[in-house]
Amino acid sequence: MKIDRLIGILSVLLQEEKITAPELAERFEVSRRTINRDIEDLCQAGIPIQTTQGAGGGISIMEGYRMDRTILTSKDMQVILAGLRSLDSVSGSSYYGQLMEKIQSGSSDFVSGRDSILIDLSSWYKGTLAPKIEVIQDAIENRQLIRFHYFAPSGETKRKIEPYYIIYKWTSWYVYGWCLKRKDFRLFKLNRMDKVTRTEDTFICRNVPQPELSSEPRKPSNIVLKALFEEDTKWRLVEEFGPECYEVSEDGRLLLVENYYDMENMVMWLLTFGDKVEVLEPPEARNMLKSVAESMLEKYK
Image (cartoon, rainbow, N blue to C red):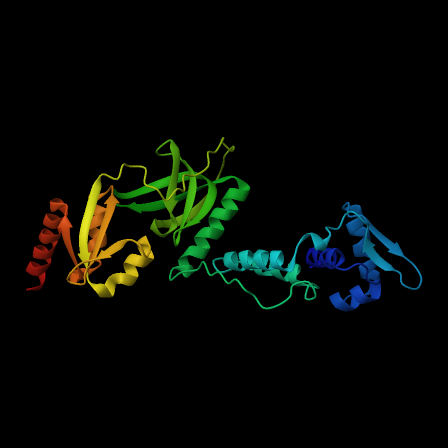
């Protein structure tokens, strides 16, 4: 397509000091006359292109328009490419891949060495996440409302929101927007959303506050957990709380003391350790675990 060729020519001109029309014609597999017409179209679009005749002549972008690549170091470029690859890992289109090709094209002398940073933001749910992200991105760009079914601990609801941000945090993807049902800004987890579609309804952007992304809980941490974990669970404790989170007791088990603000979530987390943990405090957590264990025993006996 012509638009793709124009973008390609512009990309080449931004990366090379000078190139001839025959070289462009060979690269894009068109005639020299077609390249000349393309250059005229780029000039009409406001791109300051100049041509020089004779030996050493060619086509180039006027000095001052091109960003000096010496502003960016090789390390800077590696970080930029790593960021693009991370987005490409969850992309439902080829946009980020094409953008990487544009940046890398003609830059082999500038981007030295092998990739040092590899980021994969995909998950087991990539097949369902990518289409949702693409729909939401398009809706944000076109200022269109989206509707979806949402599954939360409180139950299933139908929502319609003004989408403003797509957020990746702690292995999960979210969309942040104004919820027409709650009349407030809300954060929705993409894995809990179903039947995500754009509507024909558009909206005027509000004064959007920054999403609250702090890892600190909003509620006071007034529940103190004291529990003994088997030694072979150490890797999980270190992964979630750090290497200084526990003390080794006399019997070799690991004593963890942590503050929580939600009893139910804490108990659900403890259950993932099976019989590898013994809760000492609080007594309410011991009783809840006992009740769950008795219920499970009743089902499986």
